[in-house]
Image 1 (cartoon, helix red, strand yellow):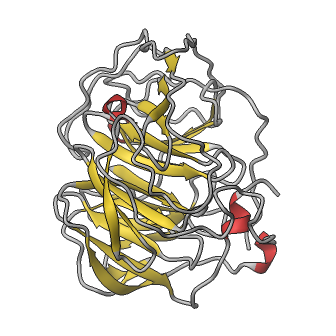
Image 2 (tube, rainbow, N blue to C red):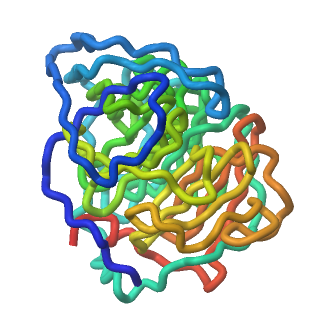
Amino acid sequence: MTRRAMTTAVVVCVLVGACGDDGSSSGGATTTGSALTTSGGSTSAGSTGSGSESSTSGSGSTGSGSESSTSGSSGSSGSSGSSGSSGSSGSSGTSSGSTGTSGGTTGGLPPCDPMQVPDTTEFVFAKAIEIGVSTLQAGYYDNNRQEVTVLSFYGQGKRLDVDGNILGDVAAPAEALPKLDGAAYDTLADVGLLINQACVLVEVDTETMAALKVTQLGFDMSICAGLAIDAERSLYIASYGTKELVVIDRDATKVILRTAIAGMPNLDGIAEIAGSDNFLVNDTVTLTAAIVDPKGAVLVPSGKVGTAPPLTGGGPVPQPDSMLTICLNGHTWVCDAYGTKCSDFAPSDGDKEACGCLIPQ
């Protein structure tokens, strides 16, 4: 098991996306930005920009680096298991009854020793999952409720159990639209994280999908096209327009690392591998995936999704985009950017439970 090579201080980080950045690496240079926080449903002072029509097109402009926070009465984020609350804005339906092992809090997660969880370096195709919604470009696994949320570029989506059975409809809030293109789940805070191509980061209540906090990211990122969070709660963002992986701290005030990834010139999707410090990344132009460490160094070179490591079997995925990992069994789902299906890939060395490894040790 690889231990984290990066130790991040808890610093507040706001990214402000700008079009036309040349995409060069700054080797971990630290950058800060301004943020304006307001409450009671006020809106961000920064423009969100236009982005692009898909994560594989040209660069789009992003905003000016301000933040707004809404208090949204979207239900307790620490509520137990069942995600059947109808909630407020943005929810078009909810799941009907999968319950989590921890009752909606992180306190009940079994302890996890990352050194005892073997790193997954290859996944094998298990099955195709029909979502019933097209243009799938964002998704995350809520390990507190044992539910998967998959969302389209336009915000419509489904909640599912880990076997791929649909539990209900869901919709992203307006604050995360248009052009939704990435998602992750913060286990410690028990919130979903959504990002769109204008690099607007939205924290949502996982039961109602109501927006809780909105932050316009920056630091010369362009076309944010993928999002992941590690156990230290650093955010990993695929900046498609600048061809970089950009790492920031959870509160979005400082860049920790930015780097290009060898062999992945059109970085699009990203997901942390369950029980590991490593990440799956993909390229929707070359239709490939690779495994990288927390600093972006390639551990498993890029291969065609569905036909070569690290994601083998099942045949090619037409347009692999959104990726999510399930800590309950170690699986990863790779969803078709312009289709209605996700491919479920299992660890080649067998299922592994590592949800406890998703919180700081």
